[in-house]
Length: 431
Image (cartoon, rainbow, N blue to C red; front, side, top):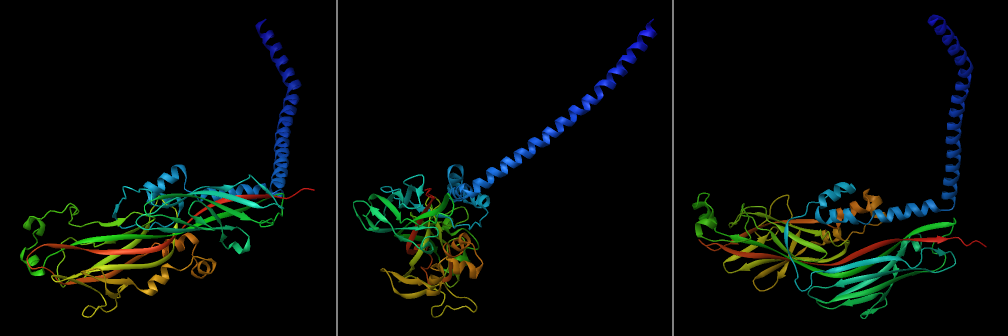
């Protein structure tokens, strides 16, 4: 009986398999067809939406917003730019220029030096093609030891070949597009950028253009490099001993390698010097003095024009320093970036940056320059606007048998340029 039951069960199973096998195959094929149909329909719908999205100009608007947002270091990237410029440069893919280390002298009464643009944006989310285009911004400013003049300009992508036009500057000390910041006093302004109808061509239903607010102002940064001197014969007689320990002289600015950081006043640009050898220095030996202009990472902007960069070098009865190029101090194949221009402050000689070096810093990073030198705008700014200068120097006279220090002083006056960008959307009028 059991064998008969098994035989019957096997036959039933075979019969059931023959009946339902075609149905299962059909269902599988239907599922596959439906799956591909859904994909095809999705692609058609997505393609149609993308086509219309691009046709209406929505894609252009989205891309423009993304590009402008990417230009501003915000949130985590903003903190990274301020705390670790090396990592920020690595993240953004731009070359990092290692700045000299300088001790920044903070202004206790006025810690927020310079000009900052706040909330630059259009007054409306979009404008119709037959209406004016208006943007506004708030500006916070403060000065250091002298009155400072600021000026505001606006530019709009595609309008008048992107050339800046005067903005409207509003505030108690404003007139036209200019304003005045009083000595050691904060100031606030409002800026308005106004463009006429048609400034942005309405080729699609939605059109986008980048607007830029430009603020320029004069600023002066000062720096100093402290140097100790001891005559050469005394240094040789010490046979490598530390002169500071030998004479019982201490200096809190000396590090473990007997080097001293330079000092720079605070502001948008830092002025740092470097004498990369242990102190003290001796007479008749040449030493290289390097000087660098670098940017304060907390203040976005660039040097628009360097008006001058000067050095004040000690020249007194028992200490006289000369720079390379002066009579009695020339080396073949080498040239100082500074030239002597006469007596400076009492006890100092004055030197200024050579005109060819000044012209290099003031080279405009415009389309012609970028095309000629095959540079991006960022590379042009990094190369020309954050320069390093150098010159050999030597002391012709130093005190005999005693440690003595003095300072080389530097001063840079420049016009600084701060910018901020916003996206303007213009929609085509539908009649």
